[in-house]
Figure (cartoon, rainbow, N blue to C red):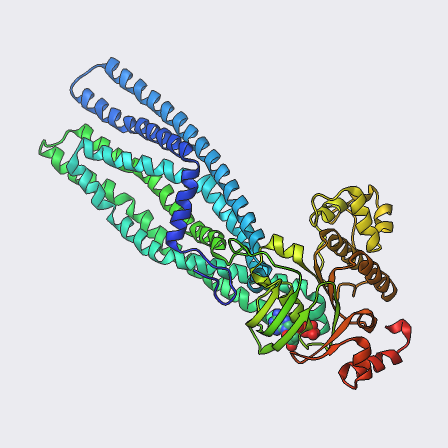
Length: 587
Ligand code: ADP
């Protein structure tokens, strides 16, 4: 299955079974041990009713108190053995569950981290988060409780049923026949439950997504007075969630009452038929009592099994969503090619977002290694989109973007990051020390290199003032980092990563104009010899560049040096004149 309409994929039933099999095999010895303990526990549980039947038959045969005492003591011993063995089996089950859950979690994190940014962007982080939290937790509950409990009860139920057959095959047959309504109810339920629970989880994700995006864009929502629209969207998501929940609730309200009523049928059947058969001298009273007791005893594991099967349904839907990540498009194509050099070629590039028309309508551009290129143009012209394609965040709908002859989107993340790095206005400060935040870019860097990188972006002073310097903890309960500090840290990471090509898209927009200018100059010094493509919002960046590209309405309309473009009479010349006319403080 593939991602449809940008959504993350969900694993199909066969894939879920395969994944579950893989988890069981990964801990095969523990599973065999658990099975063995369960078999022993169930076997010791069977002795009770059988011994009770024996007591009745012995008493009717006129045996004395001694025999009854011995049999009663045996019943007590068996009950104790069953108690201890069942506890041990559960303990082994829980341990297995915890280990397996850890495996599922680790796999999920690995897969989530391996997802290409464009896939996460399209699917929305809400879905990814719901899968990693609510869905993994549901799988965890099953592995910890439902799975082991299901195993204990299934073995118990199977043994109990077999015991009735051993005592008397005819009574056994009546017992099994009495279970048919439960079987039918179970089939009815299972046929509907999977899709119902999948719908419910998808609706939950939608709620999370809707709330998360509203909260993340709260200021925009306020500024554009979108509150009513967002409320309607959230209400819609909540209504769907409510509807899907009611549907699963309906399934449960049909299933459980039918099952509850059906429990008494096998016992009633055995007592009726047993009475008749005993009257005709075909079975002993002990056998009838033992069979009835067995079937009565069956209620408990059966009840547990049905509850757990219900739980299994909802958690297997969760597991399908967790496992679905394995089928998401991967960031790393096997045997990723190696670029021949650092030249970037954009040829006939067109691009359209999932919703909306073409944003880039045939862009051709060659960026020479070591060149400083500024891209300017009105808002909405497609500059950011072009920078995303240049950085390999997304692949063009038509045409190619290559670095050293290799399509950027085909490069493995490790290779790509050495080649091209995109710095935007969205920065993330990771929970951890300043050092941790910087080492992500270059794990081998020593403190001297870290300080040099911080100095290059003008951040050395404030980091030095933090308690602990490089060891100061950022984020969470630690030091707060405002937008401009986060931006400086991101830029310091770039300095450390030292890519051949750096794309700056509003990378210094959060800094005040003077600091921005200083930082850009400092960065330029550090990145000497590197290719820098800057989406320029302040024209001094364009002035300092080797060449300027002007974008308008998805096309590259002008390309040349600052001087050549200013002397020409195109859009850039007009922009420059307007900008040059504004006071320096506002630039
Ligand atoms: P610029 O950086 O020049 O302002 P962009 O590349 O950000 O231009 O945007 C170009 C066009 O693409 C705009 O019309 C914008 O509305 C549209 N656009 C940008 N991002 C998305 C998106 N995620 N989905 C749909 N349309 C988008």
